[in-house]
Amino acid sequence: MAAEHYDLIVIGAGLAEQIVATLLAGQGYRVLSLPAAAQTDEEQLACCPALDKLLTNLEGEHLPRHSTDSWQLVTDDIRLELGGPLPLAEELRREFPDHHSSIQALLARLDEWGHKLNLLLTSTAPDSSLRAIRFLTLYRRQLGHSLPARRLQQPIKGLLATLGAPEPQQALTQLLSGLCLVTPARLSIAEAALKWHIATRPQHILVPELTQLLTDRYAAAGGQSIPLDELSEIKYTGKCLDGVSLLNGRCLSARQFLVGSLPEHIEPHPALASALAKPPDKPRRWTLTGLPLQRPPMLARRIILAGEPVLRLTWQQESPSAGQALVEVSRPADQTVPNTESVRRQLASLLPFTDFELTETDCPSTVPVVHDSFWPRGGLPRPAASNALFCHGPHLLPSVGLNADAMLGQAAAGTLQQRLG
Image: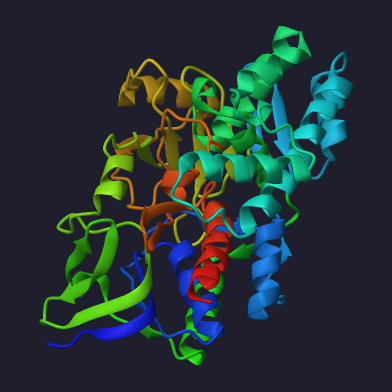
């Protein structure tokens, strides 16, 4: 049977893959997408520079809205709120009267680096399978953006140590660890800067509205779709991806491929398999039930609860999931796994006199994962074959969240457009 031929075949269910398919279809390329039902607990995306650029391209400037959510760090002595009614400077002055100026200067530096990295990641990725060349290209781009290229790879703990005093150093360590769901020993300055910049943006868009916009634009551009569960096999010849076959016997080929998360029955290309040979750890998660129907007014919807380890508590929207929250914790650097009872004890200090229940829950396929290597160590997205890219935000930039897909998707689209000519 003769293969049906496309310019690009997109395999995967993530937001990045959907962005690539939509942008390339809008440029007139013949695109086929094989999506699955994407799962994510993120309800909204911050309007960072990468997302602003994407919305302009898709004529979706009407989607952003003012963010009413805030982040709150809760310790035995501190209750610091980000994005609340008070400016950050006033929050810092109240909680750290002797160190607020140095903390604010450090956070301003992180915000500046995060803004520049946001734009850097959105640009077309260095197009080479040679690691050294990709690293050199990224390094030069960082210098062009006035970024401390080598320093960004270092653990965030080194930068926080410059604060000197233990109290603000510990508070910021817990804050950034909770924002990224990564233990400080595994968190690079670059990832912390990206997440800090994203978490403090004043506007957001709802994830369902963005995915609907992408779906509408993709259909209007003539993009085609086949459910991912109809995929039978991915075929390779050496370092080249030849095509895919479906359960009904159809064969599909393309000039270029974009590969995201794959179903378990599909064997990945050796280059991709080696990159994923040691699966990163998924954070443990619990559903918290039995909470008051109305969230206590002194608590924000998203709380970082200091302790060992740091917990992140996200109240579900008041309707229709009143009285429920999601508790997440990343695995500590020493690989010890927190048990349900230890998490319960930590939460009891935040929710006294509340008869709540904790139920461990499965992680969705798009949940952020924790790895041992620090980004940046080369350009992103990552080559998966001579004619294929791997682009999956939860794996490549696990601590940044769904906004990583908005950045990497545009970078992958630019690289593939260059390849297709």
